[in-house]
Image (cartoon, rainbow over the protein chains, first blue to last red):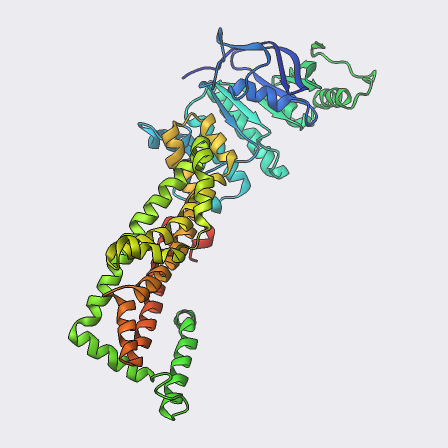
Length: 256
Length: 259
């Protein structure tokens, strides 16, 4: 099975007209690492993700993937969006098949991907009859069908209810552990980031303000006191408050 | 049992008013409240129809009209679809073609009858030409608009997933525009009959419209009414076919899913 990619983001800058969205981002991501990017809306986190997908051209700087710069569409990556973006005129199976470009042996591989998200018995149905959570699971299957080495998740759970969200988080974690691709999760939910990621990165005004390792064992529990400490550390930084003195973290936190 | 009865009732319901109207029409004619010189009774119309069927005349006329309508529709609709697709997809084509087409669209095509007769005489070409123009614009506009309003998020998704341009078109753009194209089709079918009726009434030597105009000269009011009813039935038939097509092609859409 293919393993994840290694990424090096070097001094990445992006401007739209006079608006500077990314102001020199430097980031190294290990092979198979699960990285969460948090930040307020408009901080540039989605733009960074679009660069990794190859959807934007950098104003300055570059992204190195497995020792080669990303130019044009990143074919090793698959994106999952906040909305499922399923084609309403295609069956569930065909929608997953889109992930493999409806080529060659797509039916078997799409069926395999649907099995990963436990929706194999819905393959013949139209997307319109599925619930929001099921639609997102189909979108996840579509992203996984091509066995990507890099999975880019752009707030994929933002529109789901709390219970479905916890289910989806567990599913994403399980599939990541099985298939060992590299994951970049953009989210505004700090607890989700800490629940899933090896490393949480906070972006503010186009710059990385916090790069925090999450040393917790998996499966993680939200009741763990260290979990809460990490969460308040990130939240305090987001909200611009001073760190409280009682936080003693084993985690190595570096500000870049 | 109750559900089945209800279904039959629901299917019959749209016919209540036409049947009621026919009944009143027949009764009024029979009691002489409507003069036969103004409007023949339904029974008279049916009788006239039977005579024409027996002589074979009726089906010849229907056949001629149908051929004109169909060939005009095929050519005009095909061109409308083609230009709509090209202008919807290519910004360059749109830049050069769209405003010309929009200008031409604003000429009422029936106003072209005098010049069309001068060009083609009263032969088949004249009628088919008018039908072509009549159906071109509704299909063009709805295809163009349909393609332009395909959800850009879906197109972006297709691009991110590395679909080729052709696959992007066949899997996302065209299916996304299809419901709008079918609206154009239904509208074009209406225009097709309207154009044909006028063209056949003004200048023709066969067809349903000619049959009606010919009957007028001999004061055969029953045949005139028969022709009008024929147009109504053929129009309804075309519309039902278009509806069937919608149900077939858009069955993914919850609006067309039957419970």
